[in-house]
Image 1 (cartoon, rainbow, N blue to C red):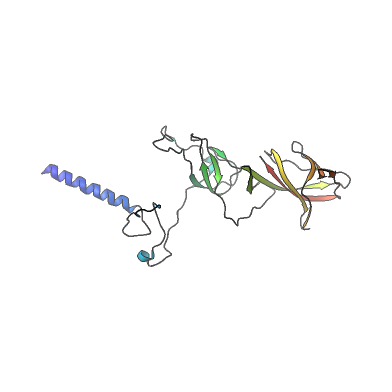
Image 2 (cartoon, one colour; image 1 turned 180 degrees about the vertical axis):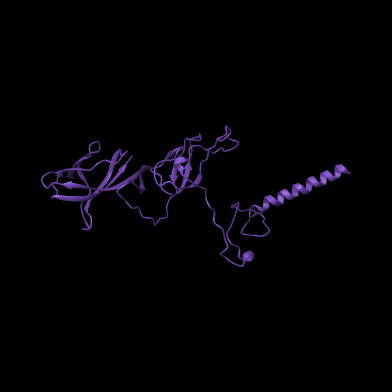
Length: 240
């Protein structure tokens, strides 16, 4: 009799455990907590008018917030990343990054960190061999090129294009000007020389440019140009 009682209690506890586990997930805010049969979605928290009498009771998914500059390890266990645990080596991991500059503490970083959603793309086969990339912004998001390094919305052959705004002074008697190269720049992609407030673009090219010294000669590849005395604005686009 005692054995039967123990078996009965075990079944009750198992049943209660299953019921409790189902209670952790709600499908379309349904009180029945049943799974969505033959559905590609494993969870749906949108409002169901047949259950809630409203289409406005849905829930949002709050992603983990983290400062990726201090994210230095994917785990502290020797089993982290083994095929039976994380066979993809965290490929596709998404976080909401709170850091506004710098690079991630683990893996590579595409460009410079900005606040927002970032994902870890990792096809390397090792935990730390992937690259953190920003989740694409909405199509109508505008890049704002500032006097600090700006990550543009463009890539060239999968290489990120950066932008920075600055000024240079022209003497009125020489074609030479100074346009300092941003940190890490490997090649100039484009330059636009203009006057702020005048709506006038003077040039989109230089006769020559030395990124090591910042020495530039104004003008086109066929003819150098002497700019009138004054201060000119420019937007420099470059690769790293």
